Length: 285
Image 1 (tube, one colour):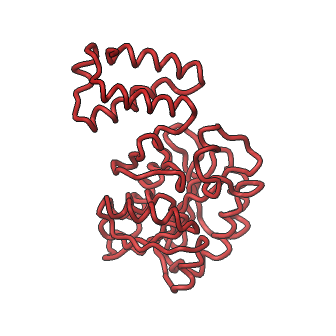
Image 2: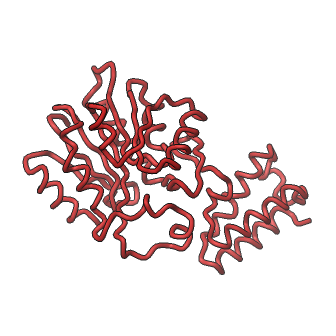
Image 3: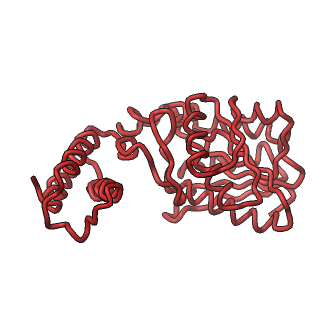
């Protein structure tokens, strides 16, 4: 058996050799040790228990083969909530947590007096955005859509596990909301926005659903679909919130001004200083 420290150093070296962030090793071991209720930091120089070492070695073998750590674990953390993830849904990203925080702040600014804030997460995937926003803001009445029935199975499980009351609808983007006559105060979406010809990391292309990644030739296909029909589901006073590609500011600005020439909007930078979020305001701010 190896000491914790020996095993970590060995796999950090292997990660460096395989262009995998070395911090993945400790992140994965921390999750495993917490699950086994084992105090990793107090025992870093002692031998690993045999069963934990076996599981750690097996998991690191998969990670070194470019499988995402979240898939090896079977879950990912998002806004403090544990989300089941698998090959049917996109792994929630840290940047998307910032989108949720910005949405919640603007709900407070614009709908503080509301008893209910009608909200939808369009293209929900794992359900992470819908779950986080609805649990963080009790006034929210949340519905969520996705074209993938398989994704919705995972999203429903995540909602149940986290105690979130969400109405899920199968269908393409806004279509289920239009069909049901739903009217929204807030429309949120993290649509696929990667241009179809852009090269991606192997761990993303091989393990995450392409339907949740690629947004047509210029990456804006799904934004156009929403912009074309959003007035059918939005109330007079409302706002839309989107995640976007860090390099899409100019293209996105032109698109918003084409569809909503007299409407206020803003593109917000994430904590890394990259353009990541688009907010479009209708009679509110």
